[in-house]
Image 1 (tube, rainbow, N blue to C red):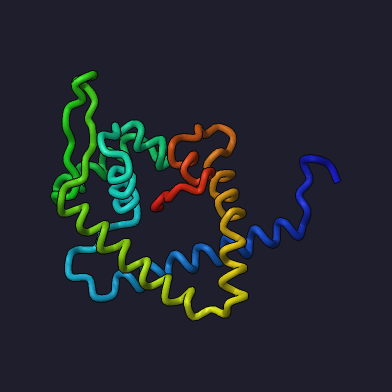
Image 2 (image 1 turned 180 degrees about the horizontal axis):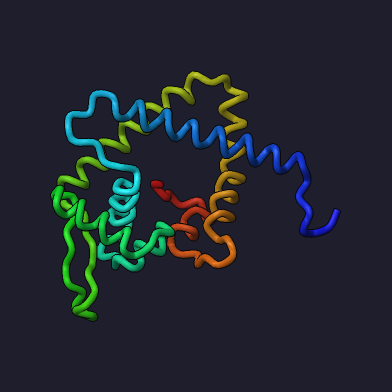
Length: 174
C-alpha cells in the first residue's frame, strides 16, 4: 500500500464514526431543546457565542477563521446575536476599523445553563453504560482529540487556538 492509499477498513471506520457522531450530536441538541423557554439559537450562533465566551475580545476576522466560516457570515451572526442582546461589540482601540466581541451576562447565563444540561444529560447516559464501555470511552478520548486536531489542521486551513485546545486536550466547548 502506498503512502497515499487508504486502507478500506479505515475508510469504513471513518464513515461509521462520522455517521454516529452526527447522530449523537443531533440527539443531544434535540434533548437539550426540550423544555426551553427562551428562543432557540441556531448551531452557528451557539458556536460563535461559545468561542467568544472562551476568548473574550476576539475580532470578527479571528472568529471567522476559528469557525472556518466566511467573514461576512460571521458578521451576520454577530448582528443577529447583538440584536438578541447576547453579544456586544466594541471598537478595537488598536485598530478603529475592527470590532472586538464580548458575550453579555445573559449569554453567559444561557451558555452555563446549556453546558450544565448537556453535562447532566450525557453524564447520565454514560453512567448507564457498563464499566467496560465507560473505560473504552475514556480510552478513546485521546484518539478522538487526534481526529479533531486532524480535521482542524487540514491542508489549506490554519490551525488556530481551537485546534491547539483540541490537540492538547484542553476543554474546547464546541
